[in-house]
Image (cartoon, rainbow, N blue to C red; front, side):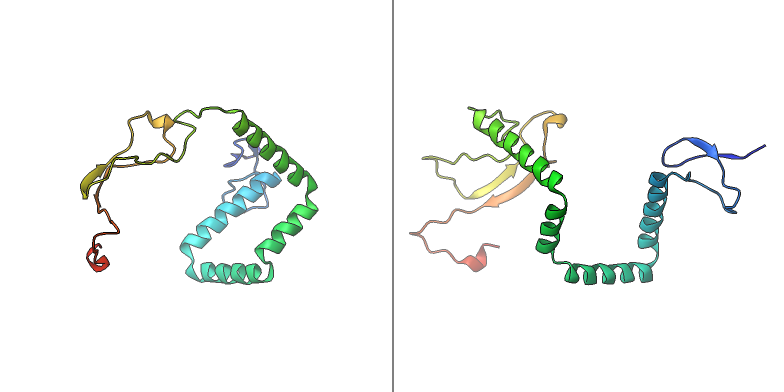
Length: 163
């Protein structure tokens, strides 16, 4: 009777490789073998400081030899389909942006309003998130206690005392 294993990556039940003496966790599919290697490297980077130092050194040397702007240009030159797809998706985003007359609060990521004719007074304030459902939040925000100090051109301010 042949021994079978369940692949840790794809979940398929496959016959075990009789040549492997240890416990086999992955099948022979190239995608699963890449997943096995990634898992091994991740574990090695967290547990072996010598290996980690060597990998960081090699990465720094590679980055020095392959400057980012040249690497990106070379990638775009070698992958014209990527460039065209990227341009098309940007065109769609631009068209969508032009068609909108009024953005909904969820579409606004940064509030661009300013205080008009309402001077802010120095003091302590609670900075808290606007009440909305968790699925609508873009960034996790917790309440903070902040101190606001106003600065006016006509009053002398000692910057050393503001921290």
